[in-house]
Image (cartoon, rainbow, N blue to C red; front, side):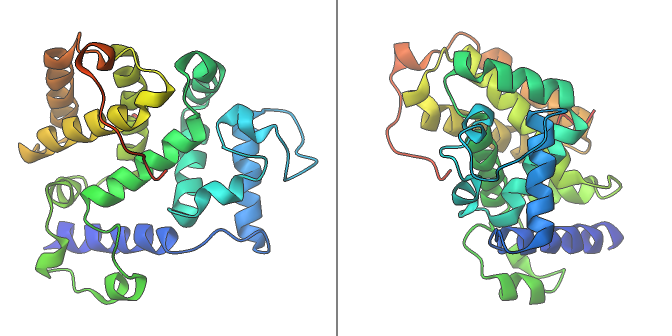
Length: 239
């Protein structure tokens, strides 16, 4: 049907960006990076692309390109979308990241990876996804079904990304986490999304209500009291 075809077309675009490696030689990639700089440092000109200033936004080093390896240009584009659509929230999270003890940009890239994983597209070959017919069973997942109900939205993946990134910050606070607990926070966020999506919500409003319900049930659970899982992570609120 129409919603499925539209959803598949958009997810193919999303996966194509994920499969596109960031290149400093690509002018469009560099322009996107400059837009992210403007989100993090409004009114400040970017005079150097490789600079320790990127650490203030939450990258792991002076060259942000190295952090995009896993999610390609998609990881960068998602951060820019969040920063440009929710500038006040972006600035607030940048200013709080020292207190939150996690790097915001890397957290955002982790959220991108998590959503791609929930769509079962993380390890898929780019050419295979591009050629996959809309009604092939390989598309099936709870998140795909939800996106089919969201086909009327212009940027459903990005809206989900923004919502998830803001929810991650709330989960971080509720779990009283620190840097070493980051994998556990990501796992908790993923679990909440999975639980809500498994109930097959028919609207974003219903999905957010389910997330709020799950969050209320989990309130008070601290990784420090329950212990946190080991391991590492690879790495909108659309109202």
